[in-house]
Length: 153
Image (cartoon, rainbow, N blue to C red; front, side):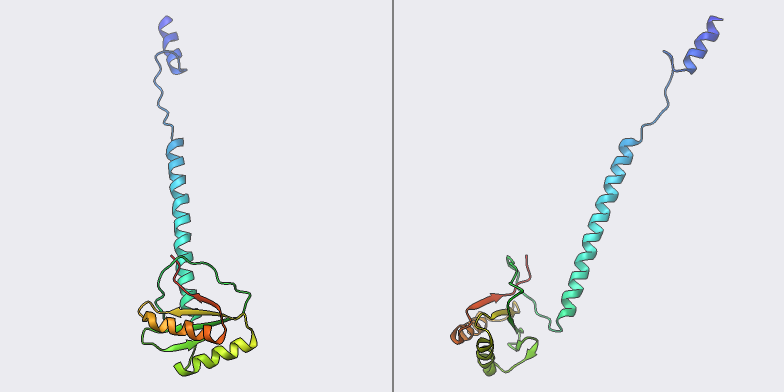
């Protein structure tokens, strides 16, 4: 009878019992963290692709902007966007204009609003002299609020 009692104690978790339980809680925690990281990184990648598509659709003009520390331009004020292609073509508000007419356009913008911003979007391959020339013409007319667009970074 003593022998039967020993077997019964072993089955109930007594002294000589063997436990075969596996604790999977830490493994589950690790998998959940990995799933969360994948979801976040995937959504960030999708957002980046969407933003690139929006940027490419917002302008039919492909300009390779130089990178730089970006600061937002005041969206509430009137802006005149001057784009300069790598070949030296000048566009004002997405319309190609002859170089000689740029100063006249600056003068008209100044007469409408003296606080008009001039945002220069020049390709990275454009010569420094051309950008400075546009800036000087804007300042000569009286437009002193100048900004240079960069590809943030």
